[in-house]
Length: 454
Image 1 (cartoon, rainbow, N blue to C red):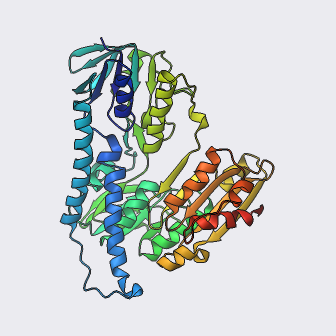
Image 2: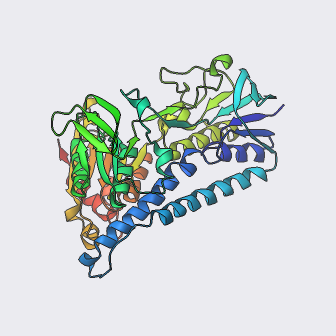
Image 3: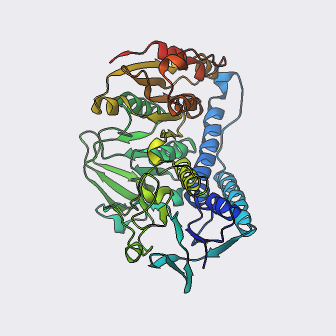
C-alpha cells in the first residue's frame, strides 16, 4: 500500500514524485519504457539538437555573406546522430539517477494497468493507493491512408535516430512536427516535399504567418503541396510514391522516405481506464476537470494524455497545478494559464494567446499591428530578416489577446508578451516599458504604439 502511485516518468511524473515524497508520502512511480518521456527521448531535446546542426550547416553555406571564407560544406550524418544520442542519453541517465536515489520513492519498470479504481497491476504485482496520477503521454498517430500497410513509413521517433540523410523525404502533414523535420533534413541535404491536406500550412495560425513560413521553406528548395484531399502510399523502385490529389502540381511525389506527421494519440489503449471507471473522450484522451481530476475521485491525469496542452511546458504546469492544490492549499486551474508555444523552424515562431482570426470569431473588438522583421534592427544586423511581429489586443479592455513573433529570437522574445498577459497588464503598461537595445523585444512597444482597429 502506497500513499500515491504515479504512472509515467515524463515531464510531470518525476517532479510530482519529488514533491510528494518530500511531503512525507510513500510513492510508487512506474515507467514501462524510457524515463523522460517524449521530450527527452524522441521530442524536444533530440529535435532541437538536430535543428542546431541544420542551422550550423545553413549558416556555413551563407558564410560568404558575412565576409567569412570556408571550404566545401559537407554533412557527417553519423556525427550528427552521435551528438543527438549523447544529448538524449545524458538527459535520460540524469533523470533515471534522480528517481533511483529519491528517498520515499519506489521506482518500478513495467506496464501498469488498472484492475480496480485504486489498484494497479504491474507485471503481476498488485499496488494500491488512494491517490493515482496518470502521466502516460502520447505517441505519433498513424492515419488510415490507402496503402499504409504496403510501405515502410517513419514517425518522429524514427526521425531522431536516422544515421543517413534521406535522398528525398516526403513529409505528410504540414504542422509543427512536419515543418521542423522538413527544414532540418533539407538543410542536411535531402530533397523534401511537404504534403498537407489543408489549404495552407499550420492552419491554426493567421494566414500571413502561414504564408510567410511557406515562403521561406520554398525559398530553401522545399516543395509544398497543399489542399491534398486524398493521399495514398505505394511502393516504387525509388522507395515509395505518394499519390496527391491537389488542385495544382504533379499527382505523384516519388520519395526514398516518408514521414507521417499528422498528429498524436494518447497512450491510453492498455491502461484499463474502463475497469477503473476513468472516462475517456472520443479520441482516447482522459477527461479532466479544471483541476486535472478525472471522473474518479483520487485519480488525476497530467501531460499529453489529458488533451489539455500537448507540450512539455504544459505537462510541467500540470504538475505545478496538482502539487499546489494538493500540498499547498491552493486552488490553481488549467483555465488560468496563458498558453504559449513555438515552432522551431529557422526563423522560429513564438506564439501566445489568440490569433486575429480566433479573436474575431469570438466577437472581440480588435486592435491589430504588424511589423516586418526587415524593420527590426537586430534582425538586419544578423542578416536574418524573414518574418514579422504581430500583436492583437482588445479595443475595449486594452488587454493583449495574442501575439506572434515569427523571426530571429521569436521563440524567446514572445515571453515578454506572455508574461504581461499572465499579469493581466494592458497594452498601455507594456508600451511604456524600456527594453534593451539592440534586441527583437525592443520593437514590441513600437508595435503596440501602432495598434489600430481592424
